[in-house]
Length: 446
Image 1 (cartoon, rainbow, N blue to C red):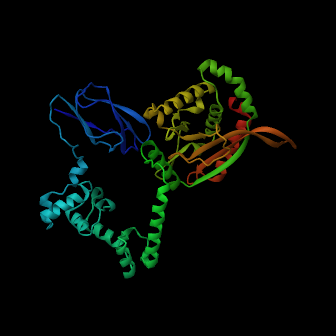
Image 2: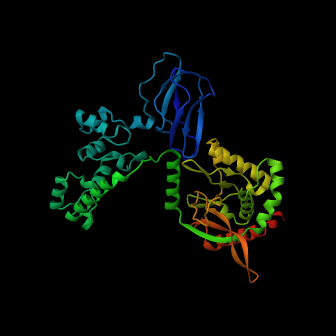
């Protein structure tokens, strides 16, 4: 009997996977544990291995298709076995299909039943009466939130939606809109209760004309998808739901530069990698976080969770996105171990070879732009973390030292924190202690 191939759920936040490539063609033999296809989740790219052996009988989706989790994407079985031409519906879809008996029970004609089923292709949970009301009012069920069990849409939900979205328009404005073949629902009214007037229609026509004129200057259009879309969605979620506050301070890096110079050959001999300022900043930050647990916390469901371990997320720029691998227990590791681990995770991130375990569990993130001509910036918090540290370049500049002007290597740190979980004073104290620790790095050895 043929076995289904499902789109797997590889993380707690994953809802869809983007199919990057099939590693087998239809008709190819497949063994258990053999890579079958590659997908992009909201976090990483990963090859998915087969749980069955046999012949790849059917592939339902192609490259770049976005597929919901637990959807059947193909079949494995014995040669010449028959499988469906189209992917079978999920349980939720099957529950949502209107049965003819149910339709008749609410006086829906057979023709209406067909039309109702075609309205949303059976993908929304709704009563037959709700579907008929939606059809009569030319309303898409996808746009309505149901109040029934498991979000099922009732007739009253549709009625209230239609009433709430009723378009108010003056007779003259309606005549103008029809003469220009405009969709009235796309016009914003400026009158009482959003009523559309003549001026609103004229403004809409002017905007459309300007948009069409400007389109000749448009270049390539790039669809927001895959990793880029995952990053975009997370940034929107963070900035929309978290009240960000950013504090900045300047750090004299003279002693850090001296320590790095002395330790470079030692660390390179042990690990084969060159010690960078990132590892020293990471070590000092992890040390400081042990003294400020609320900066090493997570905020979930109106609860501040103080994390026992200090796991540093290190933002890594990759093609078309940003990946944040996690270095576990960073406060307990020396500079050599941090150097080796950060370099290896960075390489795996750029090659899209990180495992789900290496992508999760961070409690505080560091975003370092010191390799660019950037002095300071406002980093965006990586939820559910409560803070993130932005690191700028080291730049020689004149500063006052003991009432004399000297040229010192200065670096700006930018701390963004979640004001729901942390007040300004403790955040400022954390940044002050971190600055003092970097300017006197021997402290972390005591």
